[in-house]
Length: 187
Image (cartoon, rainbow, N blue to C red):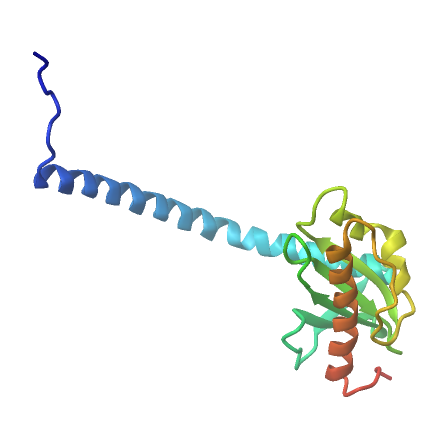
């Protein structure tokens, strides 16, 4: 005859196991919040460096200065007034339209006459080899000189959703800047 060796848990055992699990969870939460506190400043510094690098690449000068404009619409993250030693260079619009893999973080540089100078993809989660082709200069260069919302742009075969996200981003940037500046380009 086989003996049943299973032990039944009583209420005392359940509370003991539950208490141990609560202590473990609380410890992990404290460690994670401490790590977050330590890395928060470094993450902000890295994001600022990425932004600065994109603006430098778009405007072609290392000595750019940029300040956020007031009244930025909710459709974009920020609009920056970009200068070089007091000389107005234009504006840079930061936004993240939704692509296939999530938000496509991008910056659109617009001159003082309201024409696109260039577009840079800062980060994305698009499919490698397909949607990631939105970073190619051949695709991004088609927006240079554009001054009004458009839809007649080349789409990358195999990454239609990603391409349309960038197109929507450029159109949104132009509309947002126009609304902030009161319907016209800066003088």
